Image 1 (tube, rainbow, N blue to C red):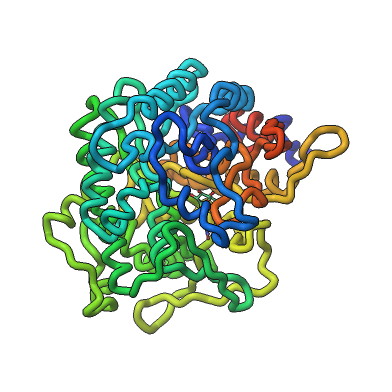
Image 2 (cartoon, rainbow, N blue to C red):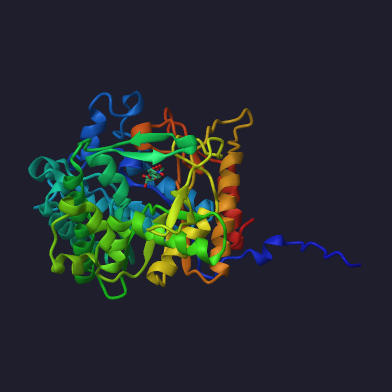
Length: 472
Ligand code: PNW
């Protein structure tokens, strides 16, 4: 017989490297609730969501998933679906209600309980120190990240947490999605859609700064990251690992050939100049400064060295391609091709679909910056989930999305790209920022009236993939 017989277990060739982390992710404001309990201070997201007109249906995170009180149930759920790592964020205003000064022991105790519960369930904790819920006191006092003082306060807070949790937490991400909270919170930004359309996104604190002021805010955010890396290393035991988690704008090559791939790499380096590129190279690309001209950020060489402090790993949130590129004879040597109006997308209005980005994003990180350890810190999609008459949730599109993306990630690992884990966004449906509770990203469904949790079909898929450490 000539035809090859399909293997009984097709996933045998689609395995991830041993020790690969099968993670899920959340953030404090999106799931905790208990917004003013146990001495927590107000955050800019409390203030922003409490102000009418900012969030769809004027919803807010006051109660959210009530994870603050239900964390034991939530950890047990994660365990039951085979999770081996959990990425969650710490609410800075729980630890320092005024941003600086006296720490609030009750706030810290919550995270100690959570971490102990995770370790008891053999789930590795990965802590994000800043997922956008800045203490409102620092917004009032300094204009938030408009001031270097906020970067310094962040480092003090990060160092304190690493010292306090250092015996239990080995992995830290300093800041989540610089581009989203800086561009969104301090000016608003456009996202490219198919057919030449763009949509405009924003968030707390809801300011609209000039381009030059915005570049200074970017600089303070990456400076805060660098100072925090140093503070974590000073406060935590040896062996503690630290990096960032950024939504990289990934250029996908139209054709997989050396010229196209080189064009895509160059575009990716340029598009992330003010964040990933400066953090991994310790300098702003010449083109970024030249293009900014008189509006370039003010900085010192010492600050650049701090920003470029070497990291243990690079975290990237991967949802969609930023653009598609082809080579060009003219500078800068590449050119964006338009995204078609009929290009497939997922439920979120910004969510262009193409799983190839899950191959190219980590591959570019390795090729451009020689990263030796990469984590996919977020990947997932929103879907129109409902409880069916049999009590189950059939999120077929999310299963399609995850299988396609993980397939591309497995391809990257097979090509030698050092990806050591992937965190699905999200562990459960939650407060999706300006979209409120309508955009469900969870692999676990949450009824926001009863707060009952129901694993979706995608959770079943995840469990089997984690069990076999393979695309299934
Ligand atoms: C991320 N885009 O935000 C955040 O880190 C999460 O808090 C959030 O819930 C999740 O992704 C889903 O939105 C994003 O325009 C914001 O491509 C914008 C984009 C992607 C992710």
